[in-house]
Length: 129
Image 1: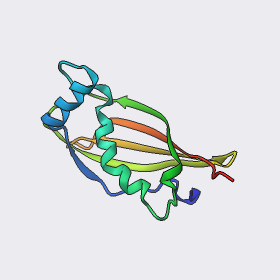
Image 2: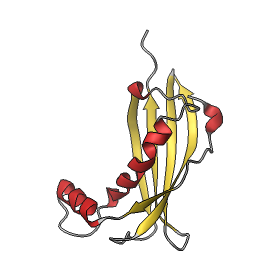
Image 3: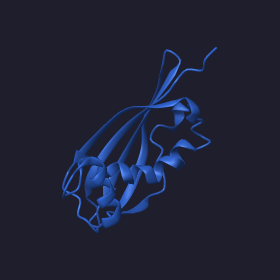
């Protein structure tokens, strides 16, 4: 991975807290109502293909494992609202031949405030000999 890309941001994309997508998420996680705390993952999936496929990053997706996930909710999401997804490469490091990539993603509301944030750490396993 290209460690020089720390701080790189990706184009912002809109994310609708769509009732049908939310209903599917509720069914999977057994929630009768409300917005599950991990629903923000659906927003991350909008930007991950661009990040993972970024030729400058030089990430070998065949060797990637999901290492960790964390969320910070500054307020509840509102069903039907449209937010802006903003992602950046927060850190890139190597240890023992493995690469560690941390991606920070914010959901920004119409007023410009962060509604919630996610930190995803991906591990690019060392190549086998």
